[in-house]
View 1: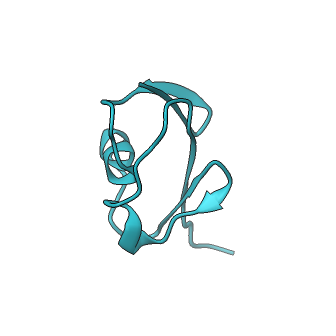
View 2: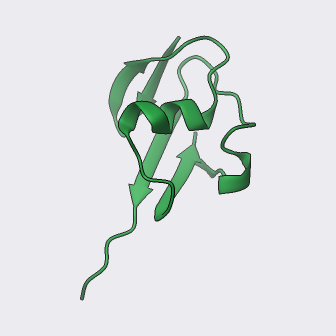
Length: 66
């Protein structure tokens, strides 16, 4: 299936979860927030939330500084 991750089209297996999308990005385990189709997905649900074909996933990484 095709999904969009941070504006870039990606191919994921049917039935993929949020965690699978993060894995292909090499995203760290902490300091990351994820939204799917505009809805924030709590970290505890990353392995449970199934993505739909055409889903739009935004992955944000916390940056420290001033």
